Length: 68
Image (cartoon, rainbow, N blue to C red; front, side):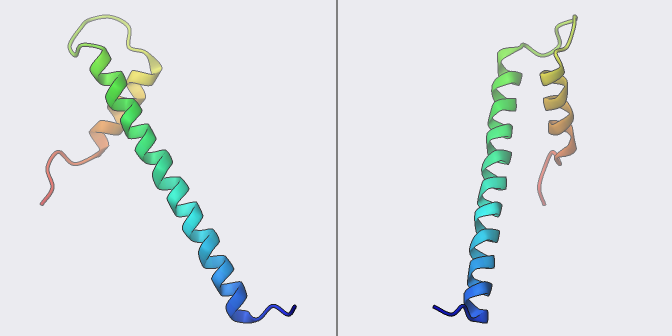
């Protein structure tokens, strides 16, 4: 069996697509986890803020509030 240029291009595209799907899945999982963390703790309570909650708040504040 001989590999041709189109085989290599197809393999590279498939690998790239799998990496993109994995990255989007991890990002979606992180968003869902942050929503769960933020909904579990009531907002505005004084006290210590966990590192996970702080990361989620930072992540949430980076996104625009409204879309055009």
